[in-house]
Structure formats: structure tokens, C-alpha cells
Amino acid sequence: MDWDTDWGLRGRMVLVVVLLGALYVGFLGVMSMYGVGILTMVLVMGLFMGGQLLFSDRLALYSMGAHEVSKQEYPELHQKLTRLSQQADIPKPAVAVADSRVPNAFAAGRSKDSATVCVTTGLLRTLDDDELEGVLAHELAHVKNRDVMVMTIASFLSTLAFMVVRWGWLFSGGDEQEGGGGVLVAVVASFVVWVLSFVLIRALSRYREFAADRGGAAITGKPGALASALMTINGRMDKVPDDDLRGQAEMNAFFVIPIKSGTIGKLFSTHPDTETRVDRLRDLEKEMETR
Image 1 (cartoon, helix red, strand yellow):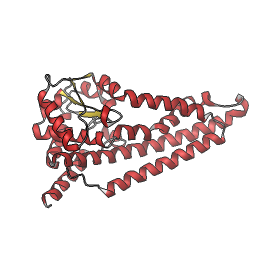
Image 2: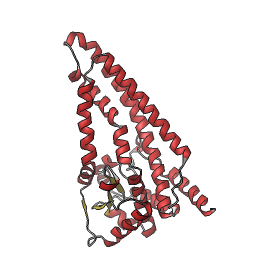
Image 3: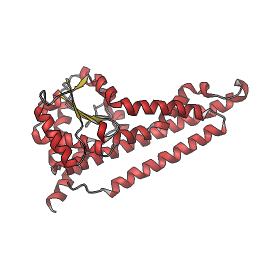
């Protein structure tokens, strides 16, 4: 498998992580200056993050109404994932299927050894074999890149800032009269950090989708198949009933293609727009053909 590094893409991801780190250091500095109980907040949110890492795959499957399936139930799906996992040089993940008309897929799990790849029945009915392999390889690239863990860690202090905005008065120290001004400053600072980190984390998520597209194409050697799959899924989204789309919108960060939610939704989307992803895959296909 030719897993070439896109240094421009990696550089942008590093820049976003550095900006997030600087933002979070400043946030903790402001919190400490005004006597907010940082240790208590970090411990509480640390437990929350640990639980999220440990149970994120089960929670994701539960929210989708998905369940793990055996080789006897879906032999071809298991065969494809076995072969693609070998090509990606990672352990084969658990296989799950969600009974949904929305054609989509996602990967969950904190590590390569505890990962699950889930597809919907709508996806299985929509894509041909090459397109399906392209989507499965994209999800395996997420597993190989440890994206669930990366995004969970990246969002840790952002979630902490949101908690301070919502319940800042609970974390105040000293008596109410002396600590009231400090708590107000902490809440304002937390709001600013939460908004900025929200935008940065969405940017990091979009960059990691590009990386997963590139990794998926490297696993199969067929960038065009993934490009075709993305276009097919994107076209099918318009034909899925609105009730089905609304029922799964909270899973956007996991899906290979997010459920559309208008102009504002695209601005703050966890995924790049499909056209840009397809164009990049087509360019990658041309590169591979000339080698």
C-alpha cells in the first residue's frame, strides 16, 4: 500500500492543533487567575473524556440502532473488510449494520484493536462493489489514523469551556461577593474559548476527512471508486425522507458524508463539501496513473 504523506494537509492540521493548544493554555491561565476550581473541572471532564473514549463505539452504535453482525449474516461485507484491513495493515474491526434508508457509514472506537466499522442498509443497497470498498477503506483510514481519539482529545477543553459557560457559578471559589466578578470573567473567557475552539475543531475535522479520503484511496488503489461513492451518496441524500435525515443528524461527525443542514450547517460542518473531496480524489487518481 502506497501511503504517501500530504505534507500541505499535515501542516494545516499541525497549525490548527498548535492554535488549539495556545487557546487552551490561555484559557487555563485566565481560569487560574480568577480562582476558578480548575482541578475539579479537569478531573470531572477527564472522567467524562475517559468514559467517552471507552464507550464511544457502543454509544454510536446505540444511537444509530446498529448491531454487530456475524460472517454468516453478511459474508461479503466481512470478506471485504478482512481483505482491506490486511491491505491497511491494521486488525480487522468489528462489523456492524444499521437498518436505515440513509446511505452512510462510520467508524468508532478508541484504538485499532477496539474499532467498529458500521454501514447502513441504505449504503449496501446503493453502492456497487468498488464504491463500497472505497467507503470501507475510508473508514479504515480513520481507524488507522486514530481519528476518534484525536478528535476526543482535541475537544476536551472545548467541552470544559462550554461547561463553565453553562454552569460557571458552580465552580467559583471563596464567598459569592468576592468571587462574583472572577466568575463573570471566567464565563466570558470560556465563551470566547468555546466559540473559537468550535471553529478550529471543525477545521481539524475537515482536514482529517481529507486525510481519510487519501488513506482510503491508498488502501484500495482506486481513488475514482471513492469519488464515485461520494457522489452517489450525496445524490441519494436528497431522496431520503426528511424524518430519516433529522433522526440521524447528530451523527454527522461520524458519517462518511454529513447530512445536509443548509448554508449555516455547511459553514460549521465537520466535513468538507463533497465537490472538493471528489476533485482532490480525481487529482490523486491522475497522480497514481502517471507513476
